[in-house]
Image (cartoon, rainbow, N blue to C red; front, side):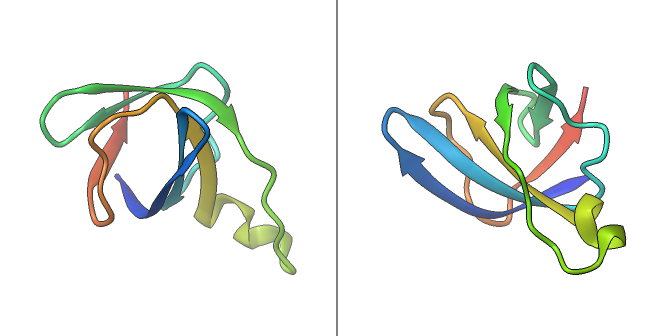
Amino acid sequence: MLKVLDVFNIGDMLSVTLDGNCAELSNGSKLIDENGNDVFVLSVAMTRHENPHDISKSTTILVKPCDLRIGSNLSIA
């Protein structure tokens, strides 16, 4: 389960920061929100961490506009 930490608009897309193990996310990945709606990952952003073990703890992704809110939960399809 991935938890939405932050959501903001970048042009006509959404930047979404996720908390949880994001090691399996890649461009084109499909996520499913709590209501069963599909969310497609357009791009996985580079993250910067001091400790390499922290890289998979949170990641920022770019998605098409959808109804994601801070605190929402997503799962990898």
